[in-house]
Length: 103
Ligand SMILES: [Zn+2]
Image 1 (tube, rainbow, N blue to C red):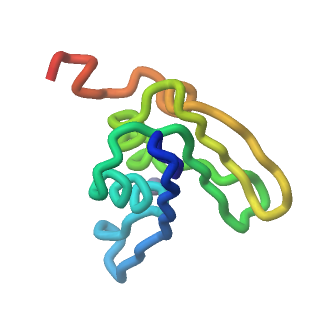
Image 2 (cartoon, rainbow, N blue to C red):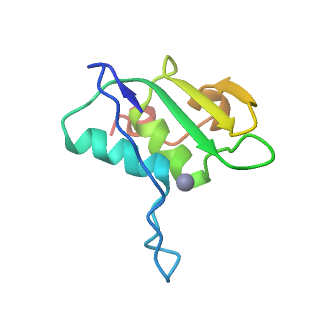
């Protein structure tokens, strides 16, 4: 995660025996950045050792929609050199956000 300040925040999956409290790497990085005062972002890279590029789960997409504007570049990649760039508007069109309803 690249904040507008230029600082890079790393995340990893934080897994638990019960699935519900598990936290994906994307959210770990976003929450880490927000907890350190970063409120604006430039880019997020999601990388995994997968056969196709990895894509964020629905929960992470919702969090991204709350914190990212459409200028944030989301890079999806794997360790085999496949790379795609996208935005949260493409990953979660019509997202529910506080801005949408004046909240
Ligand atoms: Zn996720």
